[in-house]
Amino acid sequence: MKIAFSPIGVIHTPYGSPEGVPVQPVFSEEKTATVEVFEEFREGLKDLDGFSHIILIYCFHKSDGYALRCRPFLDTVERGLFATRAPRRPNPVGLSVVELISVDSGTLTIAAPDMVDGTPLLDIKPYIKDFDVRTNMRSGWYEQAANKKQTVADKRFLTDTNAD
Amino acid sequence: MKIAFSPIGVIHTPYGSPEGVPVQPVFSEEKTATVEVFEEFREGLKDLDGFSHIILIYCFHKSDGYALRCRPFLDTVERGLFATRAPRRPNPVGLSVVELISVDSGTLTIAAPDMVDGTPLLDIKPYIKDFDVRTNMRSGWYEQAANKKQTVADKRFLTDTNAD
Image (cartoon, rainbow over all chains, first blue to last red; front, side, top):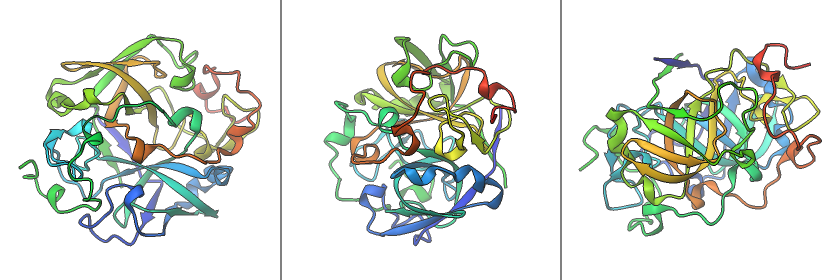
């Protein structure tokens, strides 16, 4: 069974290659980036400007293949892939919660990007407290992760030998 | 440009059709459901059991076509599609933050499902406070939504005339 998606837009960021991209928006030092939504989909952006945060769903288009175990940037131990946010996944879907600064026609300005320039955008969803915020959660390996200082990507996911 | 994904598993829930499915996990009265991860991907589940909550990314497989404006279940006003979580989207990607109760080989037991039975699973990500929790956010139309009592789906997204 194949499911075919087509981009609804493209994310423009200052990061030309995966190496050096912040691991998550929370680690980004870039102040803004833009999300270009293709003209045929812009009508769907109505009312989005009422939300301070949005969920961007996109394709890790620079990702090739996957490994079911990997060492996350923020840890020193190999983990199961689905317990990480690493880009080399069976379906290379990326997800970032970002602050929405403005909506101008088909261009969204967002804060603190963590995507490679040219990333194909698949969907935009409003971030809603009642749906998306959980408290009193446990965050597994992340809570004691030994390498939390590595907040930007290195080359480890650019080859298929990353699970060393 | 087409991006082809293949399911990594299937979500089993008590909801046989879209009508009557809870709008979000927070509205679900079902106590549990199961996520079956296909055997070839199970190695990637290692370490997931340390997380109390996970993000499921799946395909709205019962969704046909899309409308760029729609009236969300929880409101009485037509909104831009990307300001809603409605299922009829250009790329029918669904996203739910769910509580993870247990991991037993390739079967995850989750709390409070909000998907149709048989939903194709595309990805699993750990829910991590530092990445996914935002505070002091504005939630646009949702904050004053006039129909917050409608917490289960009706038929409106089962036809292409839902934007009435």
